[in-house]
Image 1 (cartoon, rainbow, N blue to C red):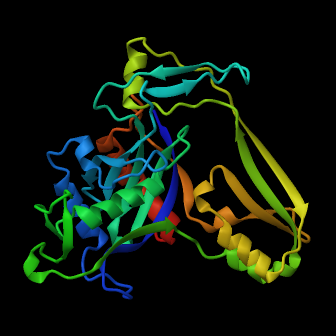
Image 2: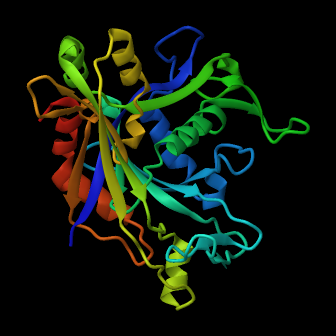
Length: 345
């Protein structure tokens, strides 16, 4: 049985430890960081892999659920666990079929020490500084921003390059600096950095700039969600299996599109391109119609994204087994992903 995954390619623009103003790191490139992360998680519990402190529920922790190195591609498959909010009574769920004003809310109790959340899957290819987010159908969020916070936290506080004073008063760890061998003898005052952004492809944006005089309409496509679509966390899956939780009624999403007459100035077109959020590629799109054409030129076509089918299925809790996912990627999808992001075969 096949699993469909929506894939978006991201480019790692910063990774490592930098001198102020330098574009290249002194050390700590992505391959070294991933190798170190692989050894760092050995023997740790899930909660011990939190790399960032959070302030309130607007930005909850992300944990390392699984990390595996590929045999053939020299890539890494990282599965993160993204925590979701809960109250003292557990995780709240509202009935999607209830009338507005009469909605019933129930709590799914969470055992002490359990972390409610959902998984995200990322395939790293260090040789090209690329990451591919792998989002299963039905999962509305790829977890990219959470992965940035997780990786940056590891580089800043936990990697083998960190030199810290663990005996500092009032804090768990005082960062003294960073060194290539992790010792104080070669310590440097460097800036830890990590950032990745959607991989752009040449063509569509430049075409629009060259043909700005022909643009006559602005198109917007979006979705209105009218269903409750629960991500099947480990806990919710277990509760379903023992009959303590029933599946809610699900509704479909409603898509809508509108267009307006629009002949942009250069400044207006650049502002639209600049403000376009590629993280909403699957939920929202912006496009243009040109004089004499019926085709819509979508800004989303400027980014490397695709859809693949792999011969694997999620387990009873909705989790894609890491060993099977990595094997399927390397066996059938690796060349296609690389071509999608770099035009290489």
